[in-house]
Figure 1 (cartoon, one colour):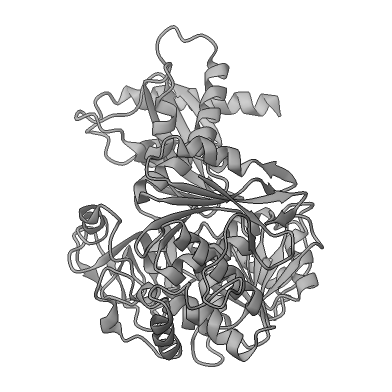
Figure 2 (figure 1 turned 120 degrees about the vertical axis):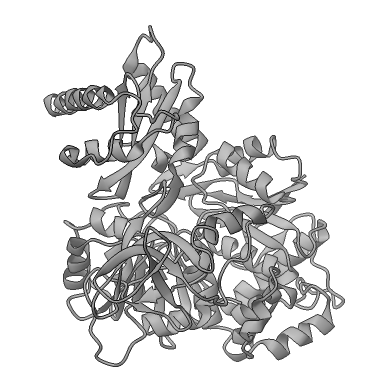
Length: 591
């Protein structure tokens, strides 16, 4: 079933073919949008300004959603005090066409959408997929789910139909909410068509809710709450500009829940940093008078040679380690050497920032390109290869956390054993982050990058196996191996080694088809920057591909290959080196 949502009357949502339940006959009802009606609503109001103790987080269920505490903290308390305060500034794809949404308007839209979900059978614990660009409706959809106790899974609106279907099926979603079209970087994205293709493979989906959009107009217990104030020095009246997509945890915590719980004005950035030109971020900062700017190092590296604008107070970096050059440029050129620059470290699994230069004592130093200080309640440790805690400074090891904290993940939906094995089995008694870190003599932490086969492309964490699987379906490709390597703009990029079947004809055509396959099955950002055809891969006698050797070859560290005695045939290294040199010579000749 498809339900059309109409925004033609402005920010207030009107539902075609549906009416929100309300005893008074009004178009929306806050009480009916709460899980258990008026009594639950009064409980939520009573809880709105209380702090949940750590003991409340023992359950793997979300206590916040059980009393719609989150939705009340994000909207209702602010509507009671200052309903006309701007909650969201929607910075749409075309610059200068921003739309401002007040807390009152956002609450009304949220309640109407919550009631619509209830009318279509969505109850507490049901899953709802949100496949929307960064927009007020996406925020309202998230808050509507929280309001009725449903679980939202927000999918980046750049994923393919196959990737979307996989996520819908993993969560067993009953409803998908989408636009008919999206806009990004001046291009139209046919979201509805992608959803239609995806739901063919999704037996649990009962309804698709579609908001229609044409010509860039719409017709239709979280730890991050205190973190935003303390890490970014947020003050009442500030405009908080986190440019992350809401399909990413940073968008959840620092575009939606964190700013709204604090009563802030949050910027929803729909476009890209280079549309219509490379000054888009800085033009937006000036026009919207943004006080705190929070983004990924990838965008900063991309913009190193552009822009001379500035942010008023605080700059933030998130998603991947930031290199010294990018840090210095962001601080001096963008921040005019006046703004505090905080390099923050955290993960989807942690729920909020864990290590950052702030909060700290007034006047405390901030070291370039370093996350530095653990946040309150976070106890990091470094582990050596034998699983022992490393003491003192000037040491590097596996970054782990030694005690629980309120925002941590409790499980992987439908696969708790995988959760235990991935995060707690490597170093018993500790949470393993998967990242490596260096600790200075002064006790400050610097994140050195991923320690497993996950690469970080422009802030998107992606398993190399996922790219390999996308290419391995090609009939001419029996084997693939993908590794990450340093990239000046993206932070990391994917390099694919492929083995072709004998008598394969047009190699260039196969490579082109492989790029297309990765873009279709995963996303365009996942397409390897380099694809090298080799005769065979470096394998141990047990058949395991030695990816560390491939990584050393393409990073020019062939003089230090380490122990190669387990290779089935050491001559494979010479073969790959020869193929790689020919590949580089061909690239040089074409430039």
